Length: 362
Image (cartoon, rainbow, N blue to C red; front, side, top):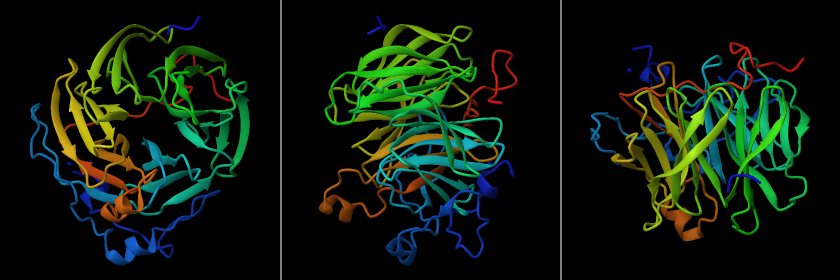
């Protein structure tokens, strides 16, 4: 049974802006991507400060105003990752469905439409990626758009789809499934190893999120957004297993729903709270150090990016917003950015060739 700021800056600290197609370098296999006309005409791409963050948090980490990086209107923006080799930010719109990418300043946006719902993806040492679609794990070649199925672990559960996923420090891709029709606690957390074998690791949750690892790789974080709880586990890097589940943060008595998460170089967990529209920084012992309010309620996930990994990139959503809410939140679905004094951690790559247990697809 399964266990129930220098050029080290974000594009030299140039304010986020939109590049027209006349200045964009088209990425192979990608389609053109356009900001909503009302967003362009309203000038929201000019790097306006739209958040209300604290100047310094309890842990001594200062942050600049929250700006719009890409003025898109994602239905369900999620799973952002910074690719250090390409110096580009990647993220998904689960419901579009599509994979997106942009430069450090928010320009040169590329889009790869997907044939079915995409929950997350993993970067590799090459341009190829691993994507977690509704049907399962696939190889993906951004240059050609080609998809090649690896494994379909949830084939017998047609109502399920993959949601959040992330690689551990040894290059194993963890991704969770969820019932996309009824929020029953029937999700499964899978681990795809660098040799492409797939293992079911945990079950008993409704909406898998907040996958992250401590800087030394000995602690794993995971949340059930529906239960409003973030757990922490002792993590065995050599074997890729987690044990000793403990409550890290319990938000069940509030409206907050922990969604995506990332860990900074000081070992603090940054959590995106969907519904409340907050980004919260937690100490390794679970204490809340700071909270940053965004101008949108559906804040979904976040990652550190830029050459110095000191810019927090935040995705958002328009999913299930009423017409009245959409009118009140014209920036909903955008990708936001916030400069921080603390750096993040580089994204772990699937099948990292620097580790002897990892292999690459022939």
